[in-house]
Length: 526
Image (cartoon, rainbow, N blue to C red; front, side, top):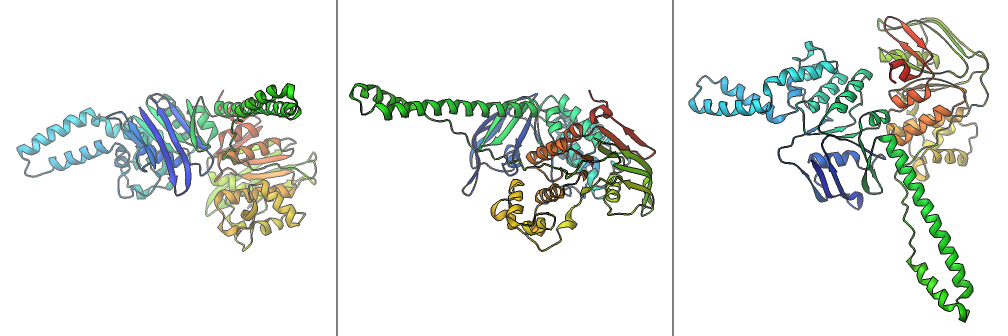
């Protein structure tokens, strides 16, 4: 059992949350959600003991072990991969090192023997004899091949290090598991494996994630960081969303009834307070009026940008034909005779064994790269706009956000552009920030604004949800669903892909698969 007791976090005058009381019980998975900056990751650090709360305390049952997903991918560079995983249980790892040191002594004494016996006893209690095989199994399940288990961490690729640190957090059946964005940089197969692992995990899990599908799949409870509080709801993310919207609606309706009662009492008092025969009733109603308090409905920290792609003209019958497209980069075949035709109402999600294949294809479709061979034929009614996976090159200008966007607006009037930016959460002074200093999420919102102003009827979108918070992801998702034109896109957000795509094209290494199905149908998920 882990509990937060009256926990408050304050940075100067700013209070992230105050007087938080939550008990996290065994067998449950708690999803921590909230707007960017609300304090989700900070709360995990408080629970792990990395940060001391301004007020209150965190307690756990004696002997329980907390395991945390490490965020520093370079912290274990000088350690072997297998050792890095076992270090997830620090006590076990230290015992293994002490045993190794004692048994390697040339002058092994009786005292050493007694110490070794105690270590062996605790080693067995911690299931140490299975430590290496358990660590290897976790690595294998996450796609780290056995040949790499004895390598040093500095020899691995960045995405492999992410998997090793995840295996480290999961190792040794911890009593309490704290995971901050565990699906970041994981491939689809690893995410699916992690989902099943957490569903079957019998202890306590507390996880921060922007992946709505993942939260729906693994969570039994949602802890919502908002209004300076943290409130726990039973159920997964979708259940929380419906519950919170219903609670807000009921509160508003209750306030409306109170407002009507107040108005009725005020009118009675105004009419009859001067009338001697009615003065007693007026006084009574005045007392009733003073007792009525409107429930305070605080504005949520959550802000949803306005994402709505409106095409200037409808697409015709001929949209896009791609025939025998080929591209080789640095000797590697990226696209090998790719052919497909886009039909009316198609919203196509692209998958690929090679992540670069999707980006290269989209760059070619957007006219930013030439193919080695093949043909691309656009219909005469088609206008396109492109969301690049790496958008930094678009912001290498000494311009404010307002002036940057005016370049792409048919109406260059500053008032029009700034009102548009306001809907994309750049209000007031924010709209005057220089584009070269924007965060990743701010740049994404700028590119989305540029796309919306284009009036294009064909969207080319490469990983739009990177750097976005859950509210912005939801807005992008809804905007793509409502769009009345064609979309070719790629995204690691499962729910977005499932709810937008009506066709899947998978650029496998040996062949291309093209099916008119939803994402879940393609994956065989019911």
